[in-house]
Structures are given as structure tokens and as C-alpha cells.
Image (cartoon, rainbow, N blue to C red; front, top):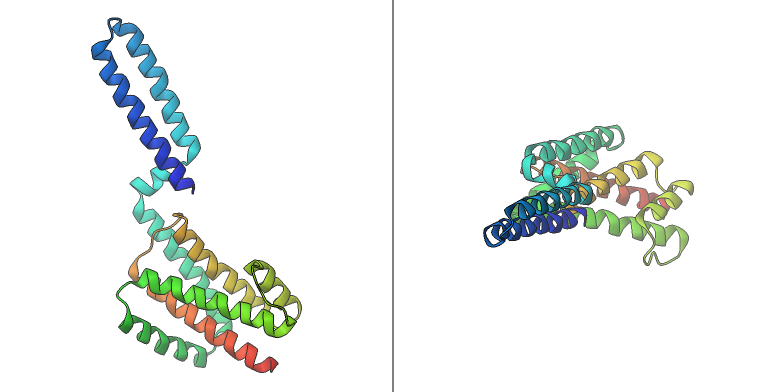
Length: 203
């Protein structure tokens, strides 16, 4: 949403500037035209910056955003190593190979895997509390599952950070390299395996 606001402000800035530059030619008083142009350009530029300072970063520094997403994956991957066992990792690798063979769009595959993580969290909530998750926030369900000891708090923290990667990607806070997306998919599959085992132990 902020990126959209910034883009609209930027478009307004260009439109106002273009119109007033054209007006300089038409107006008899060039001094008035130039002073008005200066004021409105400064105002439009201010509007652009206030509306969304990230727009400039997105336009000029895609590499920085990619690095930001990669750093996020590194952080989540580091936490995953502490709680995900070899069996879960092996299942994750097989799942990633299957996903990779079925799609050429790693970003879409990454989003699908996160959707699967969220679906399993909802299933876990329903199984433990015998309530339909409905539209309950993911953070709320994870918190309740941690409080009831149905899920390890470290796993809950990992899931929250993993889902935040998706939010950063969707809302334009980050761009992503394919290699980082595939790493993220493997982490997601390992989380899914861990969730399945946790729910099996409660039956």
C-alpha cells in the first residue's frame, strides 16, 4: 500500500511539473510562472518523500532489497537448524524437488508453501482447542498453541519470522533472488514436517 501511495505521489509530481513547464511558454509573466513552478515542484517532491520514502529505495536499490530478503532467509535458516531434525530436513528436500519439478516460478511456490504452513497452524489450533480457526489472526493462534504447549515456542517463533518473509515480499519491502526463494521453500517444508510431527504426538 505504501509503495502504491508513493507511486501515485510520484506520478502527481511528474504531472504537475510537466503542466507548469508547458505553462511557462504560454504565460506572459515568466517570473510568476517560474516562481509558481518552483513552489509546486518542491511541494510535490515533499509529498513524494513523506508518502513513501521506500519508493526511492525500490527504484534505485533493488540489490539492497534482495540482500534484505536473503538476510531474512539466513536468519530463519539459522533458527531452523536448531529445532529441525535430519528426518524433517530430508522430507523437506524431497518436497522441494517435487515442487521444483512442477513449477518454474519459485516466488509462487514460496507463497504456496507459506500458505500450507498457515493451513497446518489453523488445523493444529482446531485440533487442540476444538474451535474453527475462522479468521483468527495467525499470531493469536500461534500464541495460544505455544501457551498450551502444543507447539514448541521456538517453532512458533520460527513460523512467525518465516511468515514475515512473505509479508515483506508481498508488500514490497523486499525483492528476492531465486536461490533465496528455494532456500525459503526448503525451510517451509521442514516447518511443515515439524508441525505434522507435533500434531501426531497430540493424537
